Amino acid sequence: MRFFRQVGLTFEQQQELQPFWASTLAVWRARRAAVHALGAFMIGIVLLQLLVQVLLNLWNRNFFDALERRDAHALWVQIELFVPLAAGSILLAATSVWGRMTAQRGWREALTRHVIGRWLANGRYARLNGMMHGTENPEYRIASDIRVSTDAPVDLALAFFASIVTAFTFFGVLWTVGGSIDVPLFGGTLTIPGYLVIGVILYSTLMSGLMAVVGHHLAGVIERLNQSDAELREAANAFRGEPNATAAEGEKRTELSLKLQAALLWWRELCWQLMRTTLISHGNSLLAPVVAWVLCVPKYLSGAMTLGELTQTAAAFVTVQSAFNWLVDNYQRLADWRSSAHRVSTLVAALDDLAEQEKATPAEGTQRS
Amino acid sequence: MKRILVATDGSDGGNRALDAAVELAAATSAALTIVTIGGNVTGTDLRKLADHGGDLSKSLQAQADKVLKQAAVRATRLGQRPAALRCEWGDPAEAILDLARRDKADAIVLGRRGRGRLSRLLMGSVSQKVASLAPCTVVVVP
View 1: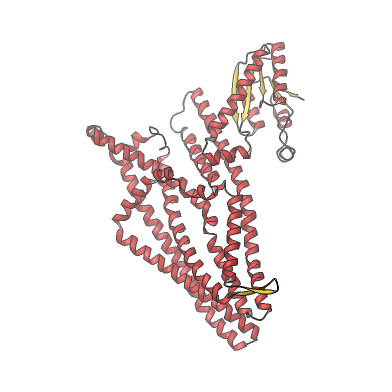
View 2: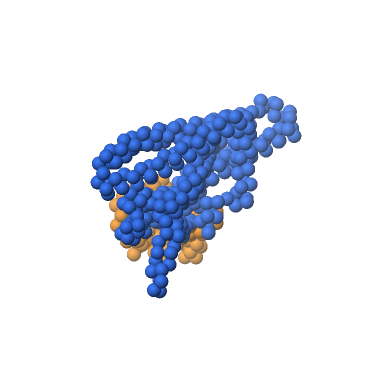
């Protein structure tokens, strides 16, 4: 459970991200119509992609059934059908990239302009520079952290939505095509309805559980590495400007070496964590199709399932299993997003504080403008 | 001999090197600089820090300060108050050589104890590297 807690957000972390979401909502409200239109467009693309995926799954069945019957005419029909399906799939994939990146670019642009506007107002950039803890490297936060914090949610949200609808749709395929299986038990027969649905749930739970055990430190390590990288940049930034006295420069040099050492140690740990999780994820990518085939083979051998149905259900099994892996596949990006959104939040919170101070002492703010 | 640099990590080997350096400094009336190379942290410690949100830099600094403090107490007890305590980071051999050049050390004293067998095979022994590249006398204490 620690793994899920690490990937998820505690109440305190949600509070820390509040400035990020408040700024995001402010820029979204200003572009309400465009946000709604693009959101609806992307949901439509995901649903169309799902439709094509289902049609390809059916095509898979029909193609292999024709192959099993050695029916040349039916095979040609399937080959002709494949062309528009493949073209549709390719076109939708390209359109999806356009939609996602347009949404990301729009969000990034709006949020960056919003933060830059507040950063430059009343000479706040000068007062912020190294004065407030947690706001070091504002340039980097504006240029890079805003990009990461607006890129990832679009991809993650769409992938999550796609996973949910895909899993439920292909549950249907597994339930109807896979059907039930009769298992001989104590001289009688036990009928398991929708046994492939049960199989995919058990298999996915096992794989997710293994990943949770093996990779439960990963999210924390990624977050620490990101933080260390930010501190390394800060230590390197300290060398900007005129050369200092030798003693001060020596201290800075030591600080830079220390931060580099910390970043490298986290990198080493990330390497070990990724090696461990790769054992599971790569093992899963090899095992999942085989498990699907093994589960379907008894029905195929008994004649209750055609070759086409066998390939269709095996493909559906792998599709559902992949959809279940959304969290496991994306926790590295989630951790990256959490770090970047946190850094943007601290910058926005500091700018809010400065704006409050300016309200309290308006003369000072005006003089600096 | 005016300046002696001794490297220690607080281990038995490091302590033996420190004892030898104190003896050498006393015999030659040289100033003693004690250096430790920080960053020796296990994966278990890192995972604990990752889970509980600890600050690795502070932890590394505290660990290095502790080693230096213990070494200073030991040297003083043996009759030689160290002229300087230094903490460096990064590759141990490179860091020791760099400091020896900057401080114009006349001798470097260090223990033979290296990393694990695999690390030694991949990266070489610290004492071997220092001995072959140092611009001054190197004493490797067994």
